[in-house]
Amino acid sequence: MSRALPENLQGVLFDLDGTLLDSAPDLYAALLEQCVEEAVVAPPYPSVREVVSRGARAVLRRAFAQRGEPAVESLVPRFLQLYQQQLARQTRAFDGIDQLLAGIEAQGLRWGIVTNKAAFLTDELVSRIGWADRAGAVVCGDTLPVKKPDPAPVLLACERAGLSPARCLFVGDDRRDVQAGAAAGLFTVAVSWGYLDGGDPHGWGADVVLDHPSELARLLRAGTLAA
Image (tube, rainbow, N blue to C red; front, side):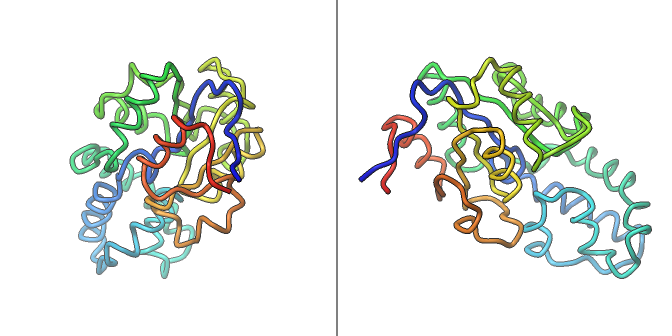
């Protein structure tokens, strides 16, 4: 038995951090600098990496939770400043992503990005990675008043890229990606190669869970997946 992808597939939308890009090393480097400034012992990298998809506050809580939420909030601007200085130094596309995107383009499909990351960071990062002229749409965490898991950013990306939601995939490494994609009417793909927020992607209700970008490339070529 098999399940088909949407008929007459038009494109694929992706989450950014933890799905397309491994940005955790740069975020961790920024946190290390801030820990030095604040005279706090830095948390281990693995504990920070798993929460990267939840954003700056989640990263900061790994080091400063004992100070309370108001203190964490007050540290956000400096953290983002430090992170911007680190931007794209160690961040790389996950293994297989470059080939996946090239294959999507070769099939005549469009692709775009829907991230909860702020635009001033997203736009610079996407540009430095070399994707600014290739992505059909880039919707950021502050593009709209709401962000994922609300479906509105996904629907906006579809509109900007000229994609019908029913003929599109949404791919992400966080439960919120699956929730947003499903609510917007897209076929949802959860990926286990990302940060996962310490969770199990098989429990998120995605249409399929994949372990490597090459699996998504094969799925797009085949048009069906094993049940």
